[in-house]
Length: 366
Image 1 (cartoon, rainbow, N blue to C red):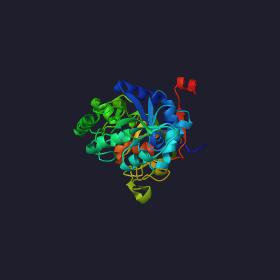
Image 2 (tube, rainbow, N blue to C red):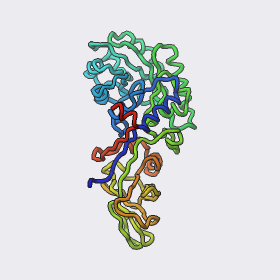
Image 3 (cartoon, one colour):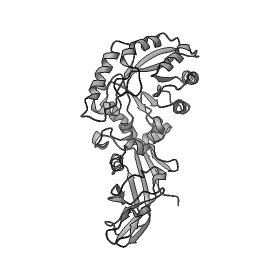
Image 4 (cartoon, helix red, strand yellow):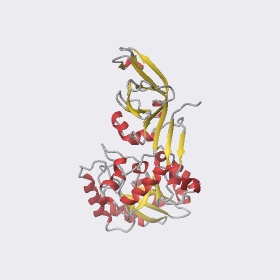
């Protein structure tokens, strides 16, 4: 018997979420964001499942090449652009579309000689203040890119910094700034991420860039993907590997961080921060044992965590445990741990085996 912890990936849920994206943005092309190993779900696996997407977004050249070598033919955007001019020949060879956001990149494009011209996205800072050209120089850099012999097409691009908060007016202001800047220039336009796509229809231009929502996770604080009509793609599941009875006053785990308030059963689960489960998840963080809700007690260890079994006197070794998934949203675990769902799904360690559930049609195509 092997260690029972598994990350289960439901590819049917992934396809459902792509369809939900199309329903939310029926007039836009979809750039499925698959960076960071497909948000922890498997880069190539996710892209091949989302074969009906119009394009893909990744963070770096290596991710893009992996997709091309796996047979992905759709347009691929390098969301961080290129880091030095030495990457440009490969960008040309693999037909990639980098985001241009610095003066240094402009200068490199003005002097490079490529086997084939490349299309680029020109990024404007519409208010997030992270990457992009200031609005007052946008026209100047656009004209410079137009004059580059090895730049074929120019798309217009920005990123929303507040779309996860539907009470904030900053998204509306960013959208208005973007509109005012790009309406005078030809080229495809892209602004909406998952939050913009679901909460701000006016941010849906020619291309939308869903990331988190494709994996069944809500971009909005205090909200779950299920409430947005999405289906969770990842379930992190394990088993009880020990069930012990302790007397009142027994201190559980490292530093005795939790003390038994009465004689009780305590379960030990094969999952810990070495697997990507958050070490800072406190006592009270929910977990499912035999499909019933209980809580973590004490500190999360590298390979194990302890759970309260007072309501399950018949629990035994081998009983199923769900750390997050369909019946226990990862957004809720993130909230208890004081983090965001992105961090949890992206942090699953390489030692955790992956079990893939494919819908019948996808099985037939593979």
